Image 1: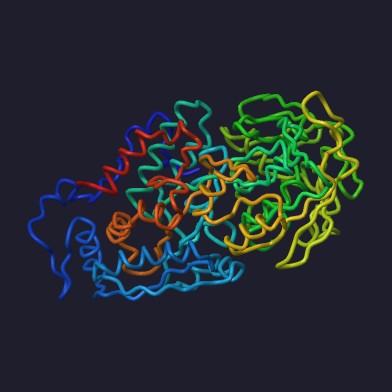
Image 2: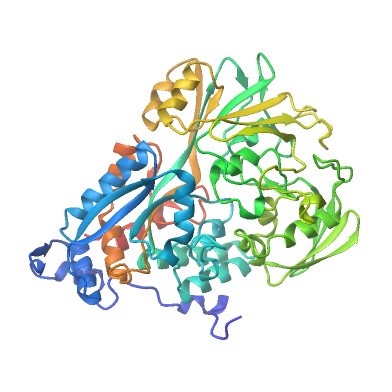
Length: 548
């Protein structure tokens, strides 16, 4: 741990960045007239920032760059609005490049090393803890390819806030830390936070009953059967539920799974020690109970009689091995941020040690699927065939076509007064449909029972049709623009701040997503209201993004 680390008692003394450092917000408004760079006039505070940054880096406008996106109609309109806004300044010459999803993922992983000259529009799904929204994307330890810090952003101050937030266990102190962290990220602008998405689920009202919309995209299909959360879904006729996936499955191994489609596809296959229910409350899953022995050690008692899909019985050795196989993998920070080792007390009891105090311990266990010993020993390749303890087991998969699961008959849950056993639905088929319009078409044709990806423009219309039920509420996902910090002029934070101020958030939400979601300026979703209440978000927007 660094000697100059800022502890909880010192964090009030951390200096926050002002909008223009030496100039400040008031200084922007006080600049007389327009600033010229060659034949280009900088008109207004945002363009003045960009002009100053161009001069500091020696870049002559217009700077040629591209906006890189996945193949998607809404994402294309998003990019066009952004490109128009930046080009209208005269400082940029923007093209738009579209990529197939898996190619785009590979590009993101190598962007900094290859010094890609591109701004990336990406979506990120956070979770139930504020750390989920910032650590993997912005901590300097999480540079790609072992993390998702795509542009290799590095800030000692941001690292300190992230580390302090993880170590703090007081709820009030954590709120203060994460609000200061968000302010620092907005001021420095390694990325621009544009839109908080909604969880918008549509299903056939005549055939599907009991459905509840899980707020996080990765957990879309949790509602099919989650006895630990008191939730299950039934069908009026038949025993096959047909939903959809908006992209192909890239991998099914938890240690390397970084895309939403893969998480959705495997949500019913894998389980962790804990779960987080539809209201954000931690619930026991594979852990029957847990006790904190001291500030960094937890004793976990496992459910007995739990079987993996390959027949193995769950023991403490599976937990230890599942955690330790993350080392050196793409998702290793999920574990290395806190895990210091574990000791097996007996077959069904394990002591888990953290290398520091760790505030989100119980929630983090939700994100770590426990896998069979065959995978831990290397005999089973989970990247092609997932095996867990969940209520459904993998059946078959055809790339670009469908993903299918079958009910696991030896699932550990015996039923209670809220949820029956076994799961009422026998087969879960997810059709891979990449075009949003085609997803609505499949729903209306009766080819699928459910979708969470119909066009935004369709939601209001479907909600007025008695044939469908629609559930919309704030989710944990957000859209952001990531800047190439490794290339001038984006090495200069003034350029990034100027671009951040120019992003037409309201127009993107209304014209691209038809009011689906809400504009945002900070990274943590208002799903976690205590960390991102409306007053805080509005203050940040007024001070850093839309100064008068």
